[in-house]
Length: 161
Image (cartoon, rainbow, N blue to C red; front, top):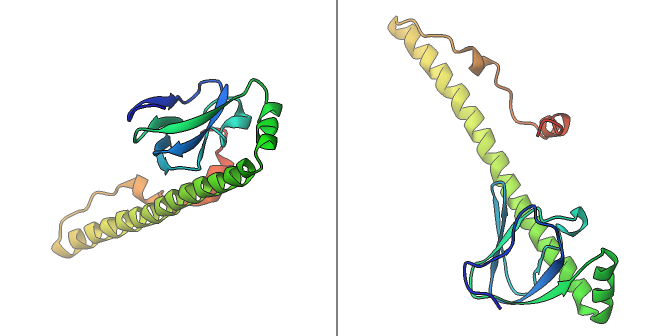
């Protein structure tokens, strides 16, 4: 058991265990994503095969959890063999987590598109008003170079990230 606000796992630490939340909620966060995990969720499972925690996990409420101590990757399979329900809970936990990340990503894509349209429309309004009123509008070259967001950009520039 841990109290509200307790750091359960920290980003970039080596993984030595995985936890199943029995009661309470935990926030998993990293680089702008924040997902609230409740009872039946596994902590650290999505990070496990990286060998280190990709997320930080902090108790949102007072939390009760069961901890699987793991020295090697094979030990996780052994823990799942002891209780057949763990496999289903693990899949459900990962699906929920992936769905939450997808919602965040979809909202981000929507906001990026809105920002792109806003910048271009505002710049067009600025130049049109300046021309109509007889005031010279200063050209902003970086605005004309802006491209609409594309997920291919991330794939092409993955090494830069």
